[in-house]
Amino acid sequence: MTALATGETTRTRWPVWALTGICLLAALLYAWGFTSGSWGNTYYSAGVKAMSSGFTNFLFGAYDPAGAVSVDKPPMSLWPQVVSVWLFGYHGWAVLLPQVLTGAAAVFLLHRTVRRWAGEPAALLAALLLALTPITVAVNQVNLPDTLLVLLLVAAAYALTRAIETGRHTGWLLWSAFFVGCAFTTKMLQAWIVVPGMAAAFLVGATGPVRRKLLDLLAAGLVLFVASFWWPALRDWWPGEKPYMASTADGTAMDLIFGYNGFGRLFGAEGGAAVAAQPGGGNVGVAGGASGITRMFGAAGGGQISWLLPLALLALVLAVLGFRRAGREWRAGWVLWGSWLLLAGLLFSFAQGVLHPYTSTMLAPAVAALCAAGFVLLWRKYRGDTAAWVLLPLAVAGTAAWAWVVISRNLAWHGWLRWAVVVVAAAAVVALVAAKQRPELRKPALGLGLAAVVLAPAVWSAGTALDGNRIGVLPSAGPLSELFAKLKGSPGGFGGLLTADLSPENRRILAYAKENGGGAEIVLAVERGSTATSPFLIHTDETVVGLGGYAGADPAPSVAQLADWVDRGRLRFVLSSLGQGPSAPAQQERAAWLDQRCVPVDPAAYGGQPAQKLFSCG
Image (cartoon, rainbow, N blue to C red):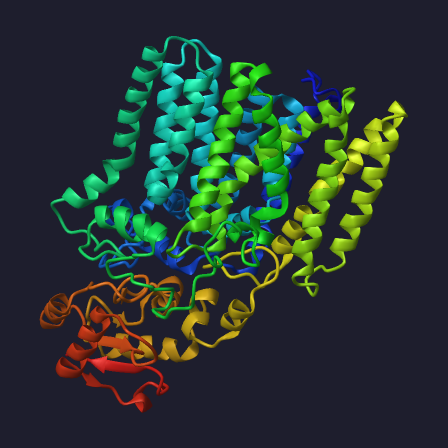
């Protein structure tokens, strides 16, 4: 605390132990519940199993062992999970272990980045704030690509910070571009949101003539392009067999980049086969809340990322007002993290397409860095002789007031916390006011102020980590929304995707198909997307194919391909549950083919229920 009070970097060993403790805390939160049998996001967990079965499946991110359809993202985030499965076997904890390590690594690397810019005290606080960001805890407990995306972007920020502080900045700048390119191969265009701000920070902070800096940026742009597009080019130009690219109209990675996972997210024109498709082929609504400037503060996003957003924005304004007296590296850091927060926050807020609450975890490093550096900045103003000292107690009070608002939205979930925050914040404000006249109270007052700021997101994060009733496919922090609470308990349908359970009925269907399939390579093809297919892929070693990919809406396998499989004896049985809701054109085409080419199997033969139909196409 002494180092934070003075704002000076210390050479003692306590920061090492403090950082170690923060990283261990992060890992503990992310790993909590490993033994509960969770499979995280069952869609990607099924893909990990398929990818572990062969080189082509691994390289192109196959969703099923037959390599019929891919997952709906580039496979980079799944490659570490596949390696873990190769090392430890296919278990839920083996799939999720890389996420824990990746999340903890991001906390560590954010510390190293902020330390070079704002000093040790700010770095430790930034690491703690990132570790205790509720939505980041929720995301890092499952196997979404966002965990690796955050690490790679923080790595890019670290390399950029090194490029700015050293005279030989070309090499570090190229590394920064490379890491952003890897982030692109993780979650496509979302990774590029930080690029304009990084370029601006380099121009503001790097030494040397403008011409040299522009040439360096041009070289970095070339590295960024190659690192971003090597996999899409390889995938689209691959001459041999490969999985159909999920959630696209034409099966190409380029369509995924600029359609479903690109401009479709921003403008709402999802395009391709993924039009309005949610897990399970039914439209369950957009969970990110209505678009607009308040989206990150609304009911859907408030408890995920907004706890410290007012403090981060206040810190950014104060820093910009002091730019004329600041050094180039100090200004560059604020440009880097401020542009990260503003660009990503505004794009997420006004996006018209599908936006899930967990997407906001990308804001967490910027919020943590800005709040940490801002708190140190406020402390310096507090210790000064101007009226600006009052900003620190006001910031503490304002942060507590916003926490009260967020917690009050659902008092059934840790409602006591709002009073705890108010009590600690009130004590901190009183102590800070009194400490202006009594310097010996400053350190305790500072400690109370930090506690008031951190308390609400810390308890929210711990509650999220300890709550075993999470939804792996759509993780969120805090209480489950009414919609997802119902989905969590629903039998079959969407609930199958959330729990990964393979029902006794489906086990009987699979056993019947295997026994009567005449040795067909594909034991069963399953309609209705990953909702229905993932439990088969996770819990059995049989070759099962999901028709239509993620949402069941993709034109793959095509009707012609299905007919060819049947003619060559590769497939005999198809399980369908169509007719339970709206169907995409590709699903309707497959349904018509089933009615024409195949015959229903009497449910009495396998103990089935009317909700599902097993077709024999032999």
